[in-house]
Structures are given as structure tokens and as C-alpha cells.
Image 1 (spheres, rainbow, N blue to C red):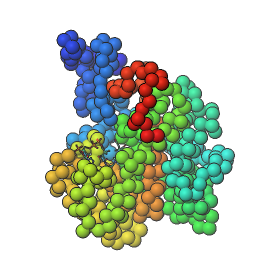
Image 2 (cartoon, rainbow, N blue to C red):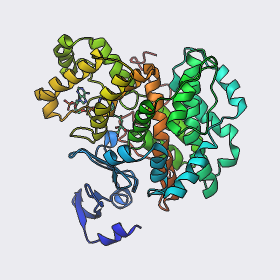
Image 3 (cartoon, protein in one colour):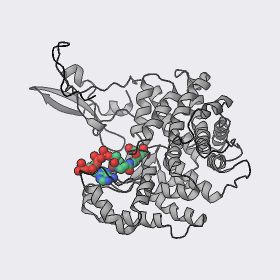
Image 4 (tube, rainbow, N blue to C red):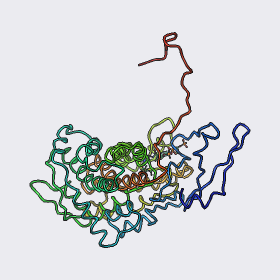
Length: 440
Ligand code: SDX
């Protein structure tokens, strides 16, 4: 039990169930809402809680990331995201997330070396790529190859060995950018470009994506800084769907590469990391500011599946601080690559302005999230929309591995096993009655 829990053991929530009252301890968070510990509810009262989508459930204790959704605050290990985006680089942030504090100069130099020596992939993985169709989505390749790493790096699969755990996290972070770049090269029919370890993480990723056998790509410092900022902003976001997936997969004792592959799969969905691709495609579909009101009407219509992609968030009921930073660097990147008056950026800014004045969006507190502006920057850098979620996944390997490590090292860690509210048949006798409703 942590000190925090012991300090607050006098606070209880009382719950009366079928005329009997039970007390459950309340723990104050360091910041943010307190939580009620209902872990003994079933053993003491014989009932479960019901909370689809975990809207009121804290699934773990964590020291990694803090979000204040009402005030639009995001901190990694206590440091504001704005400051990290300005002053840190991605690998320093990875180190911060995994080890808990900012490294000193020597520690950071050593850590960068440890990461960069893992950027190469086993030669056999190249054969693995040949098995994918050329038109496969790069996220499909990310899921497959990430999981396959467990067959190549068998000396870092023992989750009970602290050294192997660290080695696995470094491999995952370093190799994710090489896999992402290879997926891109494969999808455009170009040969793979080897990593260059004298480059920074972000420069190296751009080099592996945009160099080719005929021409070296000269990495622009402006684009490298924008890439690095994008990686920092996407590095972690507490118990989001993909991170919770990684923790749940890891709770069974599965190896780290398999857990991260599960996280990549969860991220791919358009309600989560896939929203950056979907947001750009939506803006292209809207096409012009004169169509905004038509699409806002669709977004507000309960009978229409259309949603404003890159808008709304489970935790933020205010502007996502990451979207604010991304909106600010959009114009800088567009100017740098010579795009003047980008019609898509103009449309996005107009759409945001109109939505934020609309009663529906105001009442539901729907603001642009991290996925609204990132695609405009990435497209200007030369990436096709299919690569946007891959870039999110590369960055999120930092958070996934930090949470996986924290979970494995948590002494109260148990296998994740939610229960259900059963609403199926009562016991039936086999063969007496056949369904008329069975349409399969
Ligand atoms: C990410 O969790 C994280 O931290 C994720 C993330 C990370 O870094 O890991 O921040 C990354 O996943 C960002 C979110 C990307 N997704 C999108 O941009 C897709 C569009 N947005 C949504 O579908 C939605 O807002 C979610 C999925 C992001 C949040 O879903 P919730 O918390 O379950 O909220 P909800 O769907 O129940 O919405 C509440 C209401 C609903 O209306 P009512 O039923 O109350 O009448 O708001 C409406 C929704 O219909 N609503 C929207 C809307 N988002 C919510 N209506 C129109 N357009 C939208 N975008």
C-alpha cells in the first residue's frame, strides 16, 4: 500500500445495498479527483459495479502522467507539456516517462546511445515484410511486425528480469521508428533505408522515410524540430484505450512485444489514434468553408454516424493543450515547405471557430483534440494520411512501455479480469427449442 493510501485511511464512502451498509476507503489523488476503493465490494456485498467504457473507473494507480481535463493541463512526471515541447527532445521525454525524472547530461547521452544501438532490425524481418500486400495499411504492418519482434529478440522476454525489461523497452522505442519507416517504404514500393545513428531520433525517422537509393534526404532542422515536437506531444496520455490495452495484455504475463502490438491495434481505431487520418480525410471531404454548416448539422444528428473527427475527448472538457501547440506550429511548417494559404488549414481554422460558437459543441464541451491539426503538419512534411497513426504509435511506444514497466513493478498487480451484467438465456435443455431469430 502506498503512503498516499495510508494517509487517507480515515475517509470512507458508505454504500447501502439491500439494507446493509458497507464502507469503502476514499484515497485522495496527489492532484485531481479522489477515488473510492471498491476492490472488496464483491467479496463483502456480493455485487459488481457496472461502468461501460470505464467512465467512472480508475483501473490502476500511476505516477506517470497527470491530466486536468477541465483546465486543459497535461503533465508528464510533473512537467508541463508546453515546457517539455519547447525545451526537451523526444528521447529525453522517453527517459523521463520510463525512469521518473529528467536525466542529467551524462545520463541522457548514455541513454541516447542505448536507444540508437537498437535501431537496426534483424535481417530476417526484411523477409517478414515481403509477406505483406503492397497496398496493406502501414498500421497493419506495424501490428504484425511489432508482435513478431518477440520471435526475434528472445533474450528480452523474461518479464521478471529487470534488465531484460529495460532492454525490451529500449528495443521497442528504437525499432518502432525503423518499422514505421519500413512500412512506409514498402507501401510506396521503395527499398528500405538503414538507420543512421549519428542523427537524432526524429532526424533519423525522416531520413529513413524520405532518403532513397538515388538521393540522400537533407534533414531540415525546422522539420526535425516539428517531428520531435509531434513525438513529444503523443508520447503519453495516462490510461487511454491503447495504454489500458497494453496494461491488460501485460497483466496476463504476456511478453512486452506482444503487449505493445496489442496497444498498436487498439490505437488504430478512428475513435482513438486513427482519428488523425480520419480528421484530414474529413477536411478534404468537407472541401470548402461553405460546406461547414452542412457537416456540423450531420455531426449533431443522432441518426447520422458522422462525427467531427479530431473533436471531443473523454477527459478534456477544455482545449486539448497538445492541439494548441500543434495549431501554433502548423503555419511555421507550411511556410517552411513553401505552402502559402493552405486551403485545408484555412478550412480547419474556420471549422474550429464555427464549432466553438455552436450551442451543441459548447454544451457538450467539445474542443479540438490532438488529432485535429497534426495531419495538416504531417501532410506538409510529405507523409500520406495512412502514416499519421503510425507516427502516433511510434511516439506512444514511450508511454506504453512506461506504463507496462510500472504495472509489472507494482506489487499489487493482478491479472485484469472485469465482470459483466449477464443478459443472455437462462439454462436451456439442448435441442428442445430452436431459434427463429438466428440469421447467420
Ligand atoms: C485520442 O483517451 C485519450 O487520452 C486518447 C488520446 C491519447 O492521447 O491517447 O487523447 C488520443 O484518442 C483523441 C480522440 C480522437 N478521436 C476523435 O477525434 C474522434 C471523434 N471524437 C469522438 O468520437 C469522441 O469525442 C471521443 C471518442 C474522443 C470521446 O468519446 P466519449 O468520451 O465516450 O464521449 P461520447 O462519445 O459519449 O460523447 C459525449 C457526447 C455524445 O452526445 P450525447 O450522446 O451525450 O448526446 O458528445 C457527442 C456524442 O455524440 N460527441 C460528438 C463528438 N464527440 C462527442 N458529437 C459530434 N462530433 C464529435 N466529435
